[in-house]
Length: 96
Image (cartoon, rainbow, N blue to C red; front, side, top):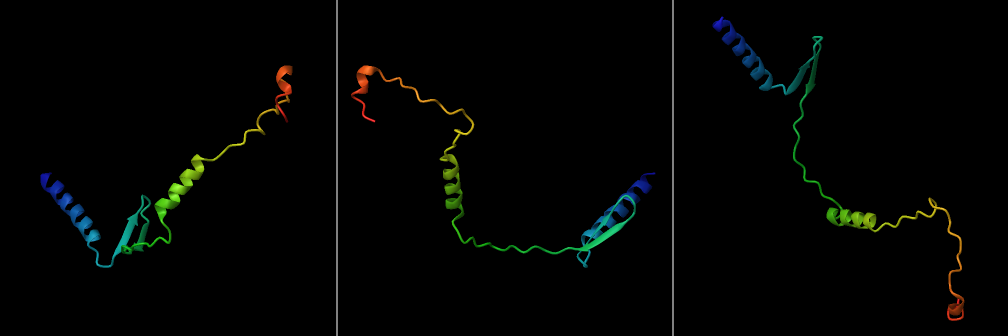
């Protein structure tokens, strides 16, 4: 029994290493229905992207605009009626 388990483990490891070291650079996927999908693996190369703008300055300006935004809630509330709450003694002092 021990020999069967070790043999099975070696076969699984050999299959894994043969897939990982395939010189064709193909990825193979198998699903539960037995279908096989094989697709080429493309190595990604590191490319340094050059931004045409100062990213931090743009983000800071967006945050500043958003933080300083004024909300107009007058459409959500009822308009206030004009109230004449100025005392009669002070009306002659206030010029409109």
